[in-house]
Structure formats: structure tokens, C-alpha cells
Amino acid sequence: MRIVIIGSGNVAYQLAWHLHNSGHQIIQIVSRHLEAAKWIGNLIDIPCTDRYSEISMLADVYLLTVKDDAIEEVASKLNLIDRVIAHTSGTVGLDALQNTSTNHGIFYPLQTLSRNVSVDFSMIPICLDASNSDTLNVLKKLAGTLTSKIIEVNDQKRLAIHVAAVFANNFTNHLFSIAQMLLERNGLSFEIFKPLINETVRKIQNHDPLKVQTGPAVRHDEHTIQKHLEYLKNDLRFAEIYRILTEDVQQWKSENAE
Amino acid sequence: MRIVIIGSGNVAYQLAWHLHNSGHQIIQIVSRHLEAAKWIGNLIDIPCTDRYSEISMLADVYLLTVKDDAIEEVASKLNLIDRVIAHTSGTVGLDALQNTSTNHGIFYPLQTLSRNVSVDFSMIPICLDASNSDTLNVLKKLAGTLTSKIIEVNDQKRLAIHVAAVFANNFTNHLFSIAQMLLERNGLSFEIFKPLINETVRKIQNHDPLKVQTGPAVRHDEHTIQKHLEYLKNDLRFAEIYRILTEDVQQWKSENAE
Image (cartoon, rainbow over all chains, first blue to last red; front, side, top):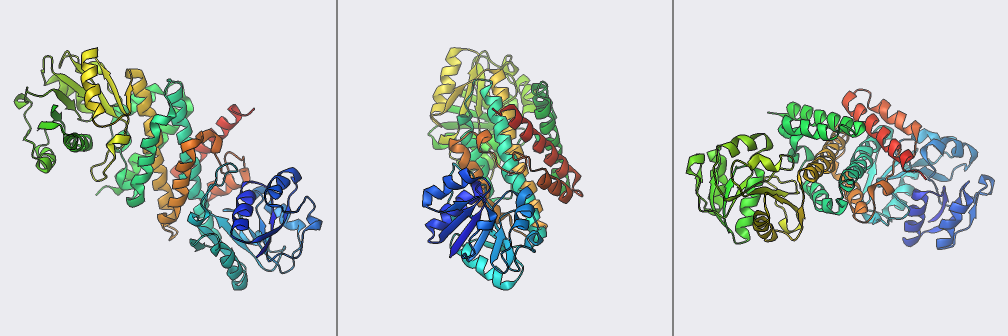
């Protein structure tokens, strides 16, 4: 298909790269940040513009990858009549695009996309929604060239997925940062934790996380918990995170006890 | 070596199994929970007792694997004179064993050990400490038959490691539980999140977690954050965890900004 990408961030970069490699023709990148657009465009020889008025009308699909805050504003500047346009947000509603084109939808890759980390797109679920079935079919066809994992979701389910992803990905990653800091200020390398972290994730491939929880919280080992909180007494924010997550682990355990 | 294992929980089970498979002779399991001890003992034909007075004096190393709260009490019931004894806790001090034997130490495997999940012990760092260098050498020799990753740590470093492990492992696992619940009550399978979680962990193999953070918190996408908190308005504990972790992500970003 011929594709126009609007935006020049991590999602724009990853989609441009993987759609190009899947045989699609990216005919244009449109972004207010012309330098960032050109950085992507130069990799695979795509014309770029920073003027919405210059957007090509020749594409089969327009992918709006700008950040959530900017979707409505950018959408209001585009009039694509009946061209298929989809945004890539987990949170913004489908109707944010209703004045941009009659054929609008959602193309939300369920993945953490960084500029400098390559990903295997065939493993990434893509969540789709659309204003009508023809549009949904176009988006399905496009998504199907990247992955076999296609999930149809309405606004409410997509929001739930996005909130859950913040817990499972962003917050998890933040806990890794905290662990790294605690180790490094004791002269220990974060390297020693990688087997532990890999095992934590390997465990949940075939077990519910709730059922394989370990550690002082789930054991109600109050003596150890107090010792840990005492250790964190000069790190009030860490102590607060420790306290609140410990309480929640224990609450769940009591709710799920037989 | 000839080994006596004291305790019958997950750590006792995993150590008994892996030390046996590494060619050591587990000569006895001592535990107040005789049924649990026998469950392990029967797997590899080890005599078990629930009487501390019947502990064999013929072992080269005694591994005290009872939970943290119980270490001092069990240690006080044992008099091993100069036999090498080590406990396996991340948090309890070395001196908890000072009245049990002159040759005491720590043998703390840095891993999440469940009964029903097998682990590759060769990937597990083992943290060691001891009351003297002869004891340390015995523990090094024993640990070296299980893993090549041996870390010598004092009480303070070991406590830091344990606190960090609670963040990187137990709390991370709890965030996975929260994500699972949010998905399942929307009729979505936790299965769809495994690529995302695997990628979250793959990323940090070669990048500092702080540097590959993504999501609404680090982007200061306040509109999305508010929408997520609104979504969680009937889950007060989840909303509190969301709020506090978002604040901490943002605090770190501002502290590490250039």
C-alpha cells in the first residue's frame, strides 16, 4: 500500500521502517519537526514536509503517530475527505478523527517503541478499531503484513489495555531503575540482577503472576519488611513505593486466599 | 561434600535438588515440618528428622534455609561447635549464627525460587560472606559447583541487594498481576501482553532502564495520565500506585535531565 506517516517520533520511525521492509511504499512524512522527519526520511528515501497543506492525497492509508496531546489539533488541520486515516494512540478516542475523514480508525501497536532499540514486529499485537467495516478491513490488511496478532477493540478496551501496559511496561521498567540505583550506590553492578529479572519474566510465561509471587510481602514476613523500610529511611519516595506495593501484595493475597 | 539442609521450603527444595544433581551427598533434612521435609527427602532418598537434637554431626556444610523470622530461633537450638553453617537469607545478619558455630557464613542465592518452577542454577549469582577465610573458602567451593557467579558481600551490601530484589522481582511481578486483572475484567487475555513484557526486559539487557523509559509519565503527557487516573477511579489502590509511580518517574527524569 501507499502510506503517509504523520509525525516523526519513535512510533513514526518504527512504523516507517517496518512498513517499508514489508514492501509498502511510504510516500511522505508530514511533521512539524522537519529535522526529525528528515532523519527518518533519509534512511529510506521518503519526501518530507512540515506543512499540513502539502499532504499528499495519493495514499491508501494515513497513519497519525503524533503524541496523544497533539492528535486532536493535528487532526483538525487535515481534511482527507474519505481517505483511510488511523491514529496510533492507546488512549485517544476513535471520534477524535471524525472530522478528518469519514473512514477513520485506530492502529495501536501494543509495544514499547524506542528510537534506538530494534523490535521484532511480527511478535507485536496491533489493536484495531474503525468507523466502518471497509476501513477496518483496510487496516486489517495493513496490520496483517506486520503481524499475525490482530486484536479488535473498542475505545474502552483499548484504554484498559493502555492503562495495563503502563503498569506492565513503564512502571516495571521504573522499578528496574530503582533496583539499579540501590545496587550501584553500593558498588554493585545491575548486571548481577539480570538472571533474577529474566527468571521473573520467564516464570509468568506459563504461570499466573499472582500464583508465583514470592518475597517478604506475600510471606507476611514483617520483620524483613521493617528492616527494608528502615534501610530506605533516607529515600522517602522509595520507602513509600515499597510500603504501598507491599500492602497491595498482601491485600491481594488475603482476597485470593482459600 | 556432605550436606545437611535445615528447613523444608522452596529454598531447601531447590538447593537439595541442585546440590544432589551436582554430585553432593545430602545426608539429612532437618525441619519442624516433617511432611514437607519428607516430600523433598523422598525425591532423592534423604533421611529426614524434625528433631534438632538428632542433627547429624557428619556433614561438611549445614545450610540453614528457614525463613528469615525463624533463623535466630532455629540457630539457638543448634550447637555445631566448628562445623561450617550458612544461612540463605538476604536480610538477616551474619552474626545471627555466631553462637551456633565459630565457622558461620552466608549462602544467599540471588533468585526467586518457587517449588513448582525449575531454574537453571548456573545462571544464579550466589552471595557469600563468612566469619573467617577458611569458612569462606568452603562456601566458595560449594557455590562454585552450582554457579560461576559468586559475589562476596557484607551485611550492608547484602541487605541492599535484597531490597533491590524486592523491587526488581516481587513488585515487578505484582505489577504484572495488576495488568492481568485490568485485562481480564475487560475480556482480554494476559497472553497479549507477553510480547510487551518480554520486550521490556529484553531492552534492559543492553540499556540502562532509565534511558529507555517510555510512556505517558516520562513524556509528561498529563492529558493521558488524567484519563488513566479517571479510568482507575473505582480502583483506589491501583490509582494510588499509578499516581506515585508516575510522580517518581517524572522526578527522576527532572533529576537526570541535562
